[in-house]
Image 1 (cartoon, rainbow, N blue to C red):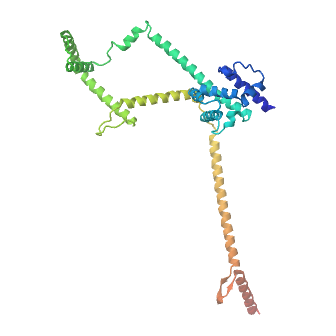
Image 2 (image 1 turned 90 degrees about the horizontal axis):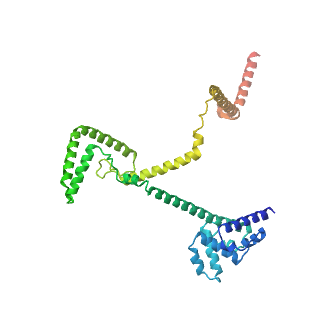
Image 3 (image 1 turned 90 degrees about the vertical axis):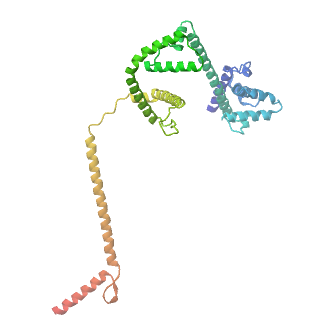
Length: 359
């Protein structure tokens, strides 16, 4: 009964999903009984095949043309095409045609339909989100291009303030004038007069700022050298001199660093932040007790090791004594005797000697 109730609930869920997605093949059915819905979705029929065709075409619109070329009598070709699409979506096996025809167990068919409908729902949500983003972008562009912000945009495109120092501005002016002369652009007399006045004003500050410029260049060069040591990915100069900073390489490095910082910030806020804000653990004041216990256990282990070695030595000594008592060896007169036998013989000879002299 539990299996039947699960199949019925799942069939109603799939049927409601088809209605919410606007499937035209379930519009005029008005099915209310779970058994009827399950029979529609899990029994082999042309209507069920058309529903599968609509689902697959909704996911991949290019399948509509392919389905239109398949004739109604070529049912096997249609089943093979649907099976191939399900296999490409990793929802069924490559030869799982019973699932497409409606001959598989109902619960398996309903799981398959539910999973493939989730793909359509995910695509629809993504399209709606992208549509909202495009609307927001259009609103932002409209706001930026409004009359209230045109003056700000003009100031950004044509800034009045020149950020360069005086000696660099003089160099830029000379470069620009030389470039204009090579292009055949002749300046007006008024412009020449203004520029000469400007150059005379800047010349008085040239000597004062020369020392500052040299110090700035040296500090900049040292900073660039330190950056180059850290950026190992930058190519070295072919002649072996100082490395040349590549703008493309710097752009790639900055982009990678920005992505890494964004990813780290997201992970920190979602996973690590709760742990990083915890108070540090308090050290136990009874650490000396554990140290003394460790020393006592180490001494106990040393004594046990010594007792083990003593036991092994005693066993080895006992085995040696037993071998001396049981093994036969050559003694006098070229005869082999054990040590107890030899001792017994010496004892008898000693007793005979004493009895002979005492008598």
